[in-house]
Image 1 (cartoon, rainbow, N blue to C red):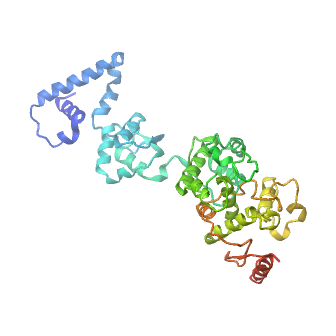
Image 2 (image 1 turned 180 degrees about the vertical axis):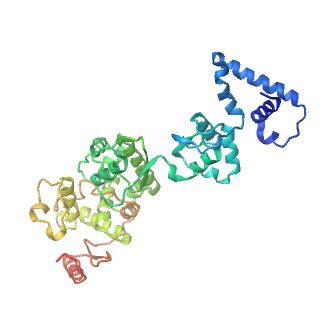
Image 3 (image 1 turned 90 degrees about the vertical axis):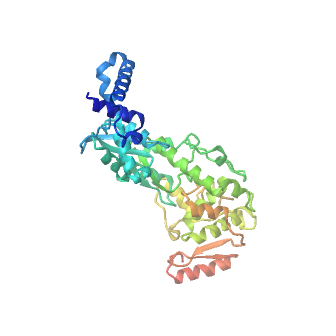
Length: 395
């Protein structure tokens, strides 16, 4: 190593920004100190000796690969990582020739602060600036993206997750049998109406969103990721506390059930709250005959989870509507025994902000999805006639 090389090593070890533009004075003194520093480091390595010299030198010398790199390597950017942290990760993985080269590249690129947390696929032996560019391009994230839309059921979600990740559907079904283990708080499995909650039912807790799933994920880790998002969204909505402020005495779980039904029944955002109120009026006021929901959507949910196809309202048989084996049947008293879909933010807000009314009926009356409401069965029949005239097949 020449004196100039040792000068550079020392300057980078001390403070590169400070020494970069300094005039060379007392070069030999600095060379001696740098040489001593390197010897001390090598001494600390003991028996490794000169075999480890290149690794030590890589932390102090601003060396860079010419690129363009080869192969493939997964790099993890963790929350709170600084440019130096990322640089060291890249150096250890063989992506860059020196940590300092990446730090320099980050200093020269103002967009470096936009690197997002996650796993990325990079190449080995890359030019530091190119490695930075790849980290800034979200196309290089080492993830599978999957979108869970509002209103679908858990079986459909498992199918989407399986297609995106390659994990068998049965693995998701097995992992889903213990929602509390996946992170659903125990408070969600309580009701105030006396009905028992199925603690192995994950329906309603798989929050609709687009997820980035690590490629080495398991069914359990994927579901935990989704449940974590559910918990975060519920906290942001202050859902539990807002339920306590409703004029009907229900649990958060019962409100979640109402939101899941409103998500399926209402086609327009403005109808989510009014539909939820009709559900509350039917199930809890005692002013609706049988205090039951009388909804085709709950019956269809049972058909689907039983391996059958859902049916249009006009095609449902009386034996299906009133099947005694169906806990979601047409005439079961009170709120449904569990959620029938994955409700999104608008439906959840509707459930906790349901505007007061004395409506007990609703029906879609046009192809835009507009809803009409009625206080009595006569009102409801009139609204159904309007729907039929508008081409809605319910007559």
